[in-house]
Length: 217
Ligand SMILES: O=C(O)CCC(=O)C(=O)O
Ligand SMILES: [Fe+2]
Image 1 (spheres, rainbow, N blue to C red):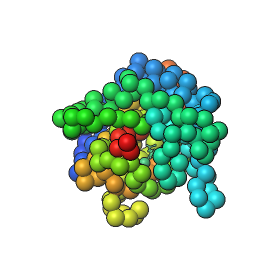
Image 2: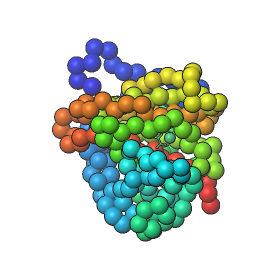
Image 3: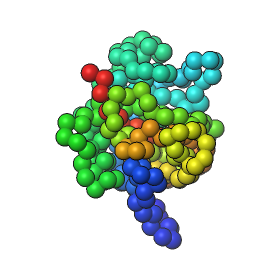
Image 4: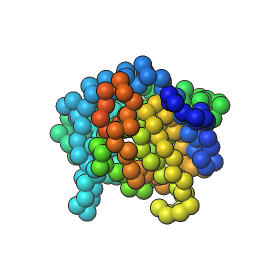
């Protein structure tokens, strides 16, 4: 980022959990943002996710490839308008192995196809509670891309929602990969920092895209 006193460096946050700052350049961020706006349109567009028990997620979501709902995957927006989920774009799928290579210094296992993307939109007051990404039937790393406002990303342990955890600032363009012994670690977003998106991106709020391997046949 401009004006940074020290460049932010690739950091291993936990075994198999790696933060790669500024992985996406400004042009790639703009392209992805334009794509997210397309994907957000109906049918099977951006929706509010209702949690069993009565709550709602404050981040709104759209899915590609397979539709996630609490707690499973479907081929249609079963908790939205019921339309078929949009396909996973090949260019987006291709970012999965490239991201794993950037984070780990080696590509994922051959044949690892990133076939699911979950796109979450966070307003100034949105948060995401501590949870595990456990509805996939694959041990392949989750790839997370951030656009827009900076957030505090809390990355914890596999046993509980509580400590130990580490708080990491994810900024626009940052990559975070979690796999190996951190694949099922609890994580969440306690806070978005409003007004921190890069000038020129044209986004108020934050978008996060997670790429996943479903392994669901
Ligand atoms: O927004 C983020 O950085 C995390 C999103 C997340 O954990 C998820 O989509 O499962
Ligand atoms: Fe998650």
